[in-house]
Image (cartoon, rainbow, N blue to C red):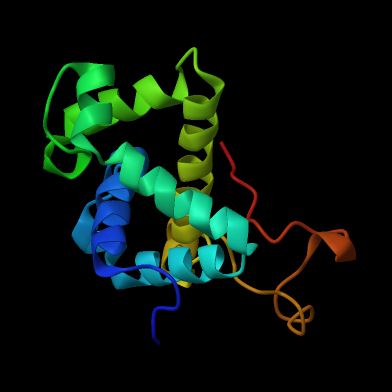
Length: 151
């Protein structure tokens, strides 16, 4: 599959962001994660795509990093602990625009990882049930698709 929206440096940035937010290595996230993010962002309105591109640039800039953490290193150059601290500064900032940006990144990373079939097993999600109601019970049928945990 081909990328529609994200440039190479933005895919690189998203892998670093996903690693910091989800606690999953870049190798495990892989290209499926960035492809899912690309499709998610590409389906947004044009003005939102532009805003996300600008947000990625600002989040990874040395100037923003210096203003928020006193460090001149880009987000992608920081250690995993410093990436997480830097992200929390965005998410819990007094500035509403930074908090909104942090929430947008959380939504993009969460959707991109947990929306892929590779993550379904770790979530114990049985997969798509439409058309498989006789094989996989659904909540609409009055049965939970997740197995009951016995003590």
